[in-house]
Amino acid sequence: MYSKSPKIFNFLLLSFLLYFIQISLCEVESNDKRFSPSSHNNIEKRAPSAAVVLQYTFGGIGLGLFGLFLILCYVISFCLNRKAMNGVILSIPWTLLDFILDALFVKNQGKDVPSLYVPSIIFLIGPVIVNIVLSLMIIINEKKKGSTEFRRWFYDNSSFAATAAVLAGADMSTLKLLYSEIFRMKKFNAPFSDDSKTMILWGCVISSIIADIPQFVIQILYKREVEGDYTLIPFLKLITISVKLPIAIIGRVFEALKDRRKPDKRRNNDNDNNNDNNNNDVEK
Picture 1 (cartoon, rainbow, N blue to C red):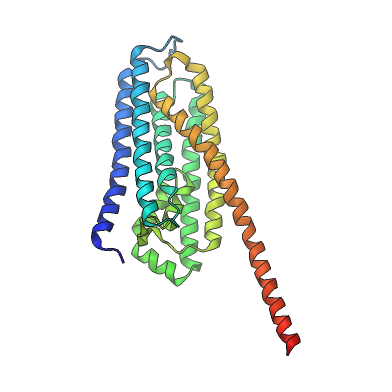
Picture 2 (picture 1 turned 45 degrees about the horizontal axis):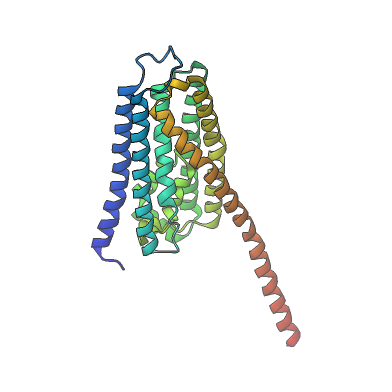
């Protein structure tokens, strides 16, 4: 058992991570409002000004510092538990950052290109509703049909589970945080069944299809339309979705293939057990 001080340190580390995301995005929004054109409806194609270049620079630096902080958290968690799903420390904050940038994009630049405004809202709100509903269904189903250990864990961490389900609106992969075992904390060690983990996996695949791919297409079309008036929020959004999309697709394909092999292993084990029993019967 770990003493209280490391647990407090880990909790403060995660709290600072969320606080850093919030402060960074507030700064991004204020900079975007300061340098964005006064009129969003009349888009004039012009060369980027020095102010635009400056905000890109500071935005890139902020994004780099954010990435370094995530790497630091990853290293700490990896040192504490190498077998944990430490990758969620990198993927989940990046996913939340991508989601908040998408919301800011719809709010501040959504009407710059009228033809993209409605699709931007649809592919922002629609996946959130689908993901939250799926997350709640998985947790409720696990609570009803799962093991006694999961019920005990849920009783002790019901608020944390509810928070994760809401955050899963940004991406279903957030639910992996519940059983990631990072920092060796009990709240990150939910005893989900294999069926629930499979449902979470396919929920992640659905999330990529209905959210990430359309948002990437919207950002590409938006960049082609505005050109010289391309401001900081769309710039950062394009970076985050460009990094997130290929990693998510490749990672989830590998997870799906890995999950698909599990029944085969079980079947082979059953066959081996049957063969052993038959051999024992013959010997008798």
